[in-house]
Image 1 (tube, helix red, strand yellow):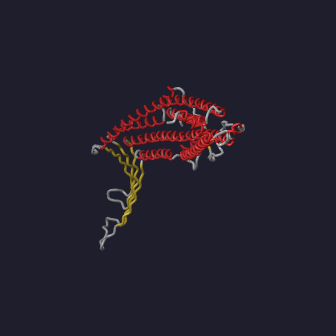
Image 2 (image 1 turned 180 degrees about the horizontal axis):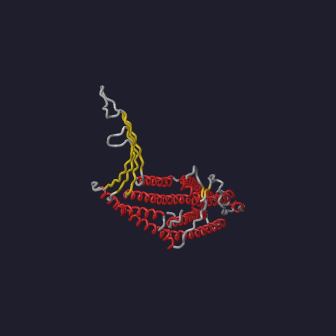
Image 3 (image 1 turned 135 degrees about the horizontal axis):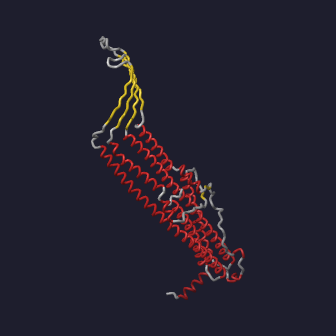
Length: 445
């Protein structure tokens, strides 16, 4: 069993083996260029940046080009087409009919003298709905459906905008992560250069050089990985915006509401709340008009005719007017089933309105708390990064003075890198929290 003293002697012996140069070289001065220093990130290895797009422009283009938004706008046109169809039953209709008949005997039979071999007839009919409550109700309900389609399209527009905004902020956050990764890589490169020159000058050891090189290579791999993530994020943004390639993002300016009471009031006018309320009012309107299924209706019919040859009962030409009263008496229970269906739709819509409103208010409360916590976390992360870099500076000074080993320097470098990455993540959290609050209050887009 080795004693602590024996292990210490073994460690000293191993260090002397790894150091390589002779003890006489220990007194040689360290070149000034070997002194490590913190350097700013260099982006010479960064991929070529695609065209940058502003935050507002990205949202606007996405709403115009995104397939989901386009389909929602097409649904408005669909609802308008259905409105025109429903309206047709309440408007006059005009139709014409012409007929020609030729009579010929078979097997030598003769056509009777009273019958003409060639007969011509024409009819022009104008039908005017005079009192048609059910058709009027269907017209009104179709108009409600157009309003509901518009409200739903506005909500889809909001959903698409929020998705694009999150993709935009992801690109911004990834660029911050790359800044931290490149800064750590360049710092570790300076450390490696210093350790290598110390070893080449005979005052360092091989293990310090290997450790610093290993840390540098890890940072190089991390930088490459983060650049690959940036490429994917830029491509995703381009797809959502609807362009044929990747897009770069810039730091947006997100201004949020600071008054919780006003924000809660704004949430009640959010697009999803408005859409749910419009659907409820349309369902209530349909229930109120159940009586039209039982009401009589009048139609006026005016027709002009021509007969050649004329018949014994009608002149060769003339016109006639009719007023037709229709009373629906029994239809096998169809109207009762339709009334029950409308009532169920109304009740479901009412429940949906309450649920959406509760969710909107909850999102506002959560967004305010999230924003407060995110800003606090960002301040702490920035302070931690400052302290980590101070610790790194002090460890480098102590390392040059011989008070610290290479391990303490590497540990400080890793801590500083992690702290910078945490700042980038906290910044993204603060941006996302502001976006959540804007979306929760209906102020975005």
